[in-house]
Image 1 (cartoon, rainbow, N blue to C red):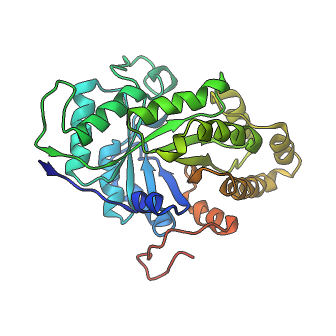
Image 2: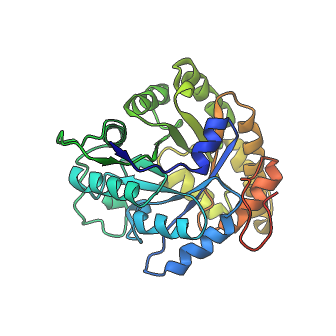
Amino acid sequence: MIEVTAGGSLRAALRAGRFAITAEIGPPRDADPDYIARKADLLRGWVEAANVTDNQGANVRLSSLAGSLLVQRAGVEPVMQLTCRDRNRIALQSDLLAAGALGIPNVLLLTGDHPRFGDHPEAKPVFDLDGVQLTWVARTLRDDATLMSGREVKTRPRWLIGTVENPFAPPTSFRARRLAKKVAAGAEFAQTQFVFDIGMFARWMADVRELGITRHCAILAGVGPIRSLRVLEFMRTRVPGIHVPDEVERRLRGVPADRVAAEGTGICVETIRHLAGITGVSGVHIMAFGREQDVPEIIERAGIRPAALALGDGRHAG
């Protein structure tokens, strides 16, 4: 049996028990390859890896596979997102094999948003599989070298398998058990929805620990700055499963308009510091959509260890 190995910084950090840092890069809405290179340059040396989203929000963008290759070429380790929304099981397995053949070291598997939320609401959704099933498919393909059809593959991929979870979506009592199903299917790391309510997240982590999930799966808590009251309102009313506590809302509304972004960054920094002290949290996933240049400041102010990678222009993170 031949294996395609794709060891990476994220895998190494999680195995070593270091506090891992990942971020996010949304591919462009056109065919500009330099767009991703510019975004990656802002993150190089500061993160273990960067997610490359898969037509996020059900909007047409450069594919996550092409984006991951461009991120990798720019010197940043990619996490290739793959959703079930647009592909049947044939296409999903094909893209998983492609990621393995091209040396992409990490995949993040999720069900995906319905097309009605995006720029082609008339598009027909596929959803041949869901995120849990796709995780099982990926694990079976990697560890057993077997496709869903039962056919064996001679050269199997070796990516790290990731999933997502939302600790705040109702019913909240079910969320840890739902993650346990994904871990049983093969997930090795999980990135969460934005964390603004530390107490609520800590209670979810207690459930996660009680189920023994952290012995098999690294938890990367999702964080990010709220930069304007418009974004605050959007998160509160338009994004399912995001919980913004009253205290956070009061802080953002209690400063002048030109200080909201700074206050949002400060809240993000404080949140990371709290999360670093919660047992079982293996790192953070920083989501600063369109503002990748803010990620280094957030990392430095939070006092967490930047990725030990040299930047291309001779500088060093940290």
